[in-house]
Amino acid sequence: MSAVAEQTGAWLEQFSDQPPAPAWLQSLRDAAFARFAELGFPTTHNEEWRFTNVAPIARTTFAPGRKGVVETKFPKSTIQLVFANGHLLSRPESLPKGLEAGGLAEDPAAIQLHLGKHASFAENAFVALNTAMLADGALIRVARGAVIAEPIEIVYVTTGSGEPIAVHPRTLVVVGADAHCTIVERYYSGDEHAHFTNAVTEIVVGDRAVVDHYKVQQESLNAFHIATLQATIGRSATFASHSISLGGALVRNDANATLSEGSDATLNGLYIVNGKQHVDNHTIIDHTMPHGTSHELYKGILDGNAHAVFNGKIIVRKDAQKTDSKQTNKNLVLSDDAVVDTKPELQIFADDVRCTHGATIGQLDAEALFYLQSRGIGKSQARSLLTYAFAQDVVDRIKVQSLRDSLERILFEKFHEHAN
Image (cartoon, rainbow, N blue to C red; front, top):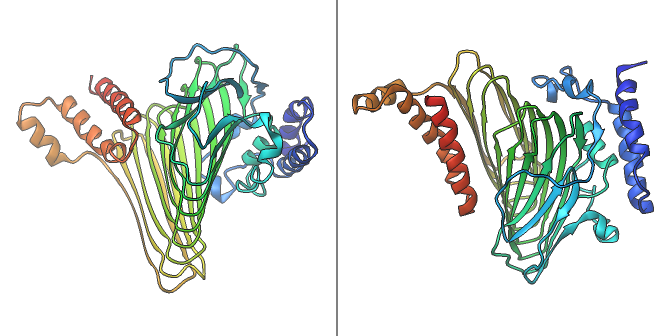
């Protein structure tokens, strides 16, 4: 039996045991599983995965996540959906005018127009598997012209029972024209058991809408986390996404944005890894129409034997004249054993554009370290301060005050522990 067949067989039972779905959704599931069976999990022979070995996921047998109450502590907010092992656990009692927030399973007909139409599973086995296992997830809809002042939070908590489990969170956000909103995705582990989170988020940004999106991943060091974000941005709309990766044994984030005429997109990220953690960030910003603008800043801090990968691709199509795009990846390496593989890419098919990219890998500035020590600050504390300052550049770009405050506390504790 081939490796692909073995992988498919391990998931076939779970796929077959799913409850019945509407005909259009079942057709989508069937097509996705068929594609997953063809692709199998990627290997390091695949160019897009050559620095990330997902064999630990492929060779593990995961049980499906079961319904239940989780004990994990996480910040509470006014508008919050909470999912436990992929199942909707709680929702807000009331919502502001112009906002709908609930589970995908509650109104299957309402999601048919967009679900699965943006995040393609044609070449991505993990998106295919997520779509094949699609049962529930978060649905956020913001009406045309609505301004939602409070952040809309979606919390996914995964907790095991001794055996490895897999969950496939699915999030669909549809924002109408001229609307404004903020979306916060949070991923937690309910315990230290191994689990596999395979998440897909589709965000549709209407013309002239403004959407701020944040993703915070704080799962256990025994968790596998694979996630795909696909944003489709309307004409003259503004979209910003900030990805914060703090936990997980093996993490892969794919963040993709497709721009229309006059769109503005920002993709920022911060990843902090230690020990034997592995984090891989792949981004694609696709300029399809003229006068688009994009900005990208990803920063990484590595210690121990950690491994980080960054691959950022900017595509400027033939018709996307007057594009202005900038991409930057900076990595701070605190250990001789940490490894960074970074690959910024530009694919430009238009001739009237302004595009730049760059990547750096370095250690703490010796002169700055000496300066702080000369002012009576101990070496370990000086290292902690400089490391904190490196990360602060991304944290300061977060507009949600409560989220920024909580991240600052996490960073302070993390670097304070390192200093000691």
